[in-house]
Length: 143
Image (cartoon, rainbow, N blue to C red; front, top):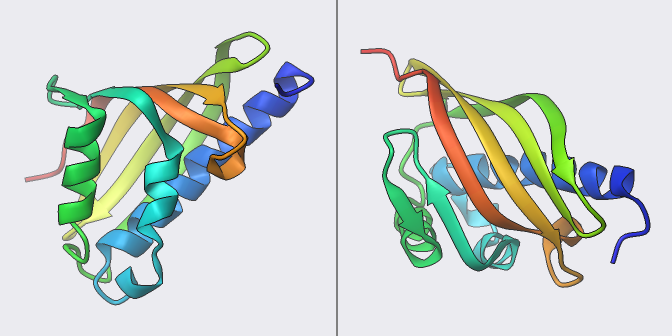
């Protein structure tokens, strides 16, 4: 258990940023060889679930399979930036984190508001595991 909630939020914030750096490495063909997929699997907690921006509900296996099969699927111009990270509800070993994810993929921009639930885990990167993620379009990919 982490001693105080500020440290838990800091670890969860670092995890949000680090996982999205992993995504860029994993999805960009020129960088995919340096990405460690086990890092992603360790971060996704048992029972993880996600509500995608289109409203589909995905379980852990579906998310892991999708990410695994999307390796090297983007060109070098793919980027993700994380903005406006802030804490939501928290207790001693659980925190809700809000953030905006901005992407540039194939020349098209998108933005999504995300809320994620994290719990402490000594075996996970940054000491926290993703338990739930909900994403909502702020700006769908440009046509």
